[in-house]
Length: 162
Image 1 (cartoon, rainbow, N blue to C red):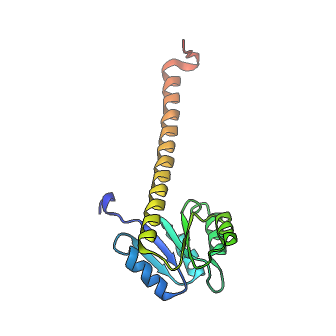
Image 2 (spheres, helix red, strand yellow; image 1 turned 135 degrees about the vertical axis):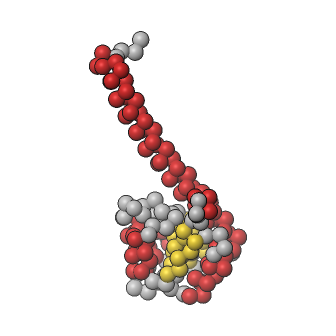
Image 3 (cartoon, helix red, strand yellow; image 1 turned 120 degrees about the horizontal axis):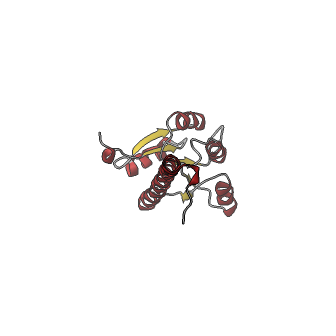
């Protein structure tokens, strides 16, 4: 399969099976979805197979979405993966806490399919552009190092720009 046919992977974490089914109906045709109904399993999956984006419920048993997000963001391999909270919590304090632990955005329940689609698409574009810029920066730095070695080989230590 060539790169243009690879679908972005989205991890959807919600303890309510009906919410997972709704997300599958909205996004399943365009993205590779991994649907998980508990926080521990979601963390393990994300660490073993980093997704491109995570949709995360806040209110879950055993570990809430805030703690899941905090743990995801503390892992260097997952720190740049956007996390969008899907929640019925709509207090300003909840949003402040979510952004403080590293969330990229919020979608409030009841959800709207066009809003979910638009926000997912936007955050995936941002992530892919940031990934591209990181890769390009690394390539440019490698080229600069090679150019420095080439100058040294050609001109020795006496190279002076006039």
